[in-house]
View 1 (cartoon, helix red, strand yellow):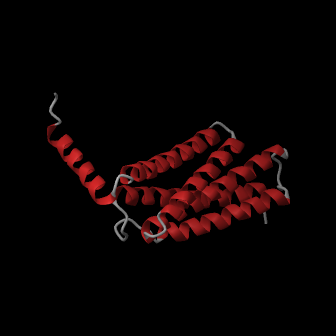
View 2: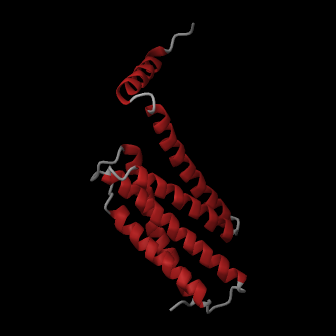
Length: 180
């Protein structure tokens, strides 16, 4: 039988402690949260790929799904205010991206000539409202000032950076679309 090594022994011991203290459901719950976070990230990556390929509808679809996943994670972590706020901020950012990409798809379908229709402009307003909410939530989660672990603190910084960039993108889109 192969020896686990020091790191393997520590991991096995940690898993035993988790099962003893939290019960037999703990590994399943932990795996589900990690799986949901990975799915949220995968959906966000697919949205970025879609928009890079000129597929605004696909980008809106995947951003919307990422927002739903972030919302589920926020509900699951609502007892921990730092993690709940982190996921609500991610949800608002992804929802803003969904609205922005949806507006772009509508604008392109209508011929892509300014001024944009009232439907496109109202969808851009929704994107603006969502990004303002995301900025409020994510700015509260500055790394080093919260109870987030190191991985989530880095992700929070990344999301805040994305949100700041998205604010500028929304402003530019509204100018291009000639929305009042």
